[in-house]
Image (cartoon, rainbow, N blue to C red; front, side, top):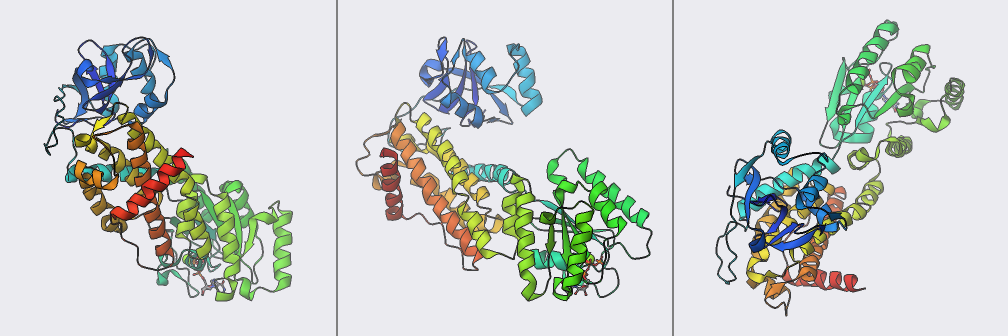
Length: 489
Ligand SMILES: Nc1nc2c(ncn2[C@@H]2O[C@H](COP(=O)(O)OP(=O)(O)OP(=O)(O)O)[C@@H](O)[C@H]2O)c(=O)[nH]1
Ligand SMILES: [Mg+2]
């Protein structure tokens, strides 16, 4: 075992369990009662669950242990509760569960004795740059899975009704130019247009005269295939059903699809080509749709002409409302109709960002429960890396932006957390970092990075170059002071 991870589950010879915080501190239940910080010297772990030499971290379980006010009969009870394992489980079962769930084996491990010297020794604990970046990449992938979910939108309607044009008007470049028709049906089967933010299924348009049953059946099969996927991220989350405003009528086939093939709760009826639709046609379409039981609040009139983008804005807002929460952010980012809405959505991420920062602050404070000697301050680096990766995922920083801004910064973090840099950052720091300072340092770093990511995301919407994420000591000091003041209030 050569890499211990923050939150790894340690097992000492006496069958006591604890979560690893640093090479000096373990969270455990030394005697019946609440979870406590114990010194590593007293705990003396002998084994750890690891996969290929790297300990499996249980970050959420660790956080639950930090926040828990519960009492436990033993540390094994604590571990079972925090890892959501069944009540009636013995140590041998635990080995099996860890193997099945995480592919982890119990490996021998001993913690090197802490050295309180100020030399920059390479112990097993500190992360080097490469490890920090690897850790970042893993956590960033996790964050994208959590915050960067993209919606699937199915666009369906008669051929030439303006499906592909509609998608292009709303989402821009995602649709290739040659997908827009000139009289002949262009979209054969289901075209899938996708980017990192949205996936559009542009259905083959139903041709007048074509067997409507065949089209309906094909659509039914496609929808069923999508909706039976065990992963809800692959379901159809929204349907834009297009009816051409000029000259069209509402057919039985339209209504059958809207009512019976799609989930009516997910359908927006989009009356297209509003720029060439006469008022009388508009009224009679609304009348027919309402008579068929479709609420007027689900009918939108759009046009891809410049002056008609108002209708597209309505469609954008209604779609945003109707999409499940997890997919809203990516959708608003993907649309090209309403810049202000995109900026507003970025600003609204502050609440989630605060949650990410608070989690890291709590973890850092737990790590500082027994003051950390300045020479060991890098134990805070994994906590910061996780926080920065989550914020990058939340603010939708895509691969290129991450490579440009976040990765070089993460590589530098290790340097920021060595004693000499910290003394420059926090005057009067003394020789150790206690819980409050560890928390404040992490909170300030969180605000510093969040502000940068927010500015970067807004700059992208406005077409400005993205600001660099450089570590400016003076600027950071300001964040530190501000954060501290807010904490004290
Ligand atoms: N005036 C006007 N013309 C439009 C509008 N939207 C689409 N069109 C035209 O209608 C024709 C068909 O548009 P498409 O977007 O290719 O229609 P589609 O539904 O994707 O057609 P298929 O892929 O064949 O099923 C094209 O010539 C478009 O330029 C609109 O809002 N106003
Ligand atoms: Mg098309």
